[in-house]
Image: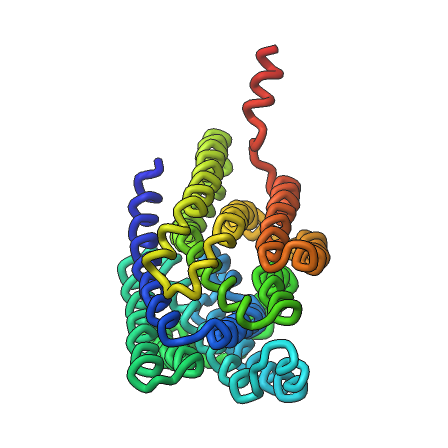
Length: 423
């Protein structure tokens, strides 16, 4: 039963690892060519991209994934095209809002309007890039998926080395290398969509409405998850300083080792899961539940192990001024494990097309994150931010599990039921 899943997952995981390996290998280069303050500003640019991502395109990537499985009922290429129309309009609005709010953004991030505008363009490019990856994914074209993903990361690495090391560009060079790689691949992605006949220049209002109905409820959720991921560094920047942000970010990036696995597995899991859920088989659902519990246990174990090994990793991997980042890793890694468990639960909500309820999950988790960040950083220093984020991910996971059980029941407590029956 799981052979196809693991074969596909291994390709996606291998591709994701290679893709993430390039930015990960850039860490020792960046830390030896940037001070902690500079690295803190670069982190602010990355956080800005993280926030703009769900807004550019209005989170309708998932709609394309979902509608592919109903492609026999719709004109799928025209659906993709109308999603790109939404992207163009939302991107233009983002540029206008960024210009109007540039003073506020600068006070929070130390980034001028020129960098924010570049971030908007990169976000638009990332959306097109992701659409191409989604189409490769749902069509089970794992090799094409891997090639497209990995080569983009290689271009990012090459440009970053040129700008940071050769041209001594500092954090601006790192941001430019990252940005240009996505802009180039956004253009290549559009060409792939055009040649693959996924572009049909017809405005279809029902498709636009359907995509927005799917995506708009996800925007607060996506932004909420982004806020949980970024508020810690914003609080540290404004309560402690950019130097602490640079150190904390290294801890985050070491913890990304776990998130690499989570994202790679989930890309294979989603189409496989949706295909199984369509069968409405109780035995299939029981197998899915058993496997999910094993997966949860593996994630927690891996997070603890990564935290314990982090001092040894950092000792040989980054310059001496960054080695104090190891104290953050175990907390952030556990938070990522909980986030991976959260993602497993969101898949059922997406399949049931009940994404409008996701907002309530983050309505609980985000305020808790804000409150905990403020008080924990005040009491414990920067480590309090990592602890606050972990607790917030735990709350989000539990709430999402309860929601998914409500909108798409699964036999999560089959063992308890069996015991009661046997008793």
